[in-house]
Every structure is written in C-alpha cells, then in structure tokens.
Length: 277
Image (cartoon, rainbow, N blue to C red; front, top):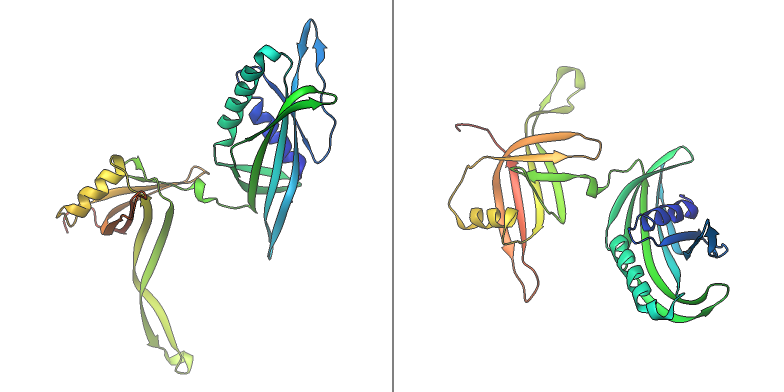
C-alpha cells in the first residue's frame, strides 16, 4: 500500500503551486497546526489540512498489488482580517477548484515498487466560520478524494488515440485481433488435430461523446455520407513514448440520442490496405 503521507505530500505540493501566495501544510491522520511565524519582517500564515482514510480495499491478485482508497481532506483557512474574509475565502476557493476539478494519473514509487495511480476528486464543500484554537477565526473546506492504483499498471488515461492527427475523446476504447484458423491432423499426433493461423484482422472500437466539431463532425459526415473505403490514419500514443500507427477504414458507426442527454457515437475501424484495393 502507498502510505497516506505520500498522498499528503503530493496534495501539499499541488496546492502550494498557486500564484496567490497562500501557503498550505497537509498532514496525514494526525498532526499539529502550523502557526504563523515571522520570516525576517514578514508574517507567514498557513492553511492547514488533514487527510484521513474513510475506506480502503485491496484486490487479491497473484504477484501484484491493486488497491483503492477513499480519503477525506479537511482544510482550515485562517481569517485574519474581518474586512477581507470574503476575499480570503474566495482566493482559497479558486485554488481548491483549480486543483480538485481535475482527474489525474501519475506514477508513484515507494518501497521499491512503482504504481500507476489515478485520482478523482469532489469539489470542495465550504464549512463554517468560527473560532478554532490555536488558529482563531477560520473557515473550513472539505474535499473527497478517491485513489485507485495498480502496481506497474497501464492506465487507460495513458493511452491516447488520434484519427488523422486529431485526438479522439473516447469514453471507452478497445482493440481486437481475430485470427483465421485452420487445423490439420498430423501423423505424429495420434490423430490429434492441431491448429495454425493463416491470417488475422485487427479492429478498433470507440464510444465517443457527440460533438458538433472535430471528430464528432467527421463521424457524422461519414455516417450520413456514401464513402466506403476512405483510408484514415489511426495513431496510438502511450505514456512511455511508444507510438503505433495503422491505416484504417470505417467498419461501422452510429449515433445515439435520448431525451435531453448528450448524443453519443459508437464507431468501429478495421485495418485497411493503403492504396488501390
């Protein structure tokens, strides 16, 4: 398992990257509030945060570690100037929304193991303004965080697909490879029939939110048009820098619409010959 202090350090680093000069200290499970102190002639104030584990689960898999953790983060921001309370709270809200509105994937190494960690957040809930020793008048913010990690894992977010150089904003993607198989009974097998492959076909399937521009517009043109064998370039990019490129044609496409929900596409490509058929 990744130590909670490791996550606390990552959160602290992300929050302290702000350009508004607000300083954060994040503790795991237990810790003491960081008081303001004098640095030369300037007083430095801290917004303290504490993360606690709400629930966790380890998936039993032979030879590797897969786990999830749900944690809560409570931040306490000092309100040191009554005339600027709203301004201070708004500045904190802007920083928290910037950090916790993103889905992140990052590698984390600990105890000789490397994990692919995906993180999802809830936007911060604003708490009560009240006197809290030893901070004084302060306001709290609460954030829910969920970590999912796998040892030496390849996260879906690390796989980027491009069609003719335009990124495909997929919600689900899959690659298939189906072989054409023949079998034969050989003299040295006592009648056992053994198989061999003579060819294979590679396919690429995507579920994509419908858009009026970009890939969405191209899919709609293909769906409503009469082209059969227009060849496209499909590129796969991986987090380790690996790149694979294929020539493909549309195999099938559809658009689903329902009520007031956003429309969606199901699109399939198959590998194709580049040139005259």
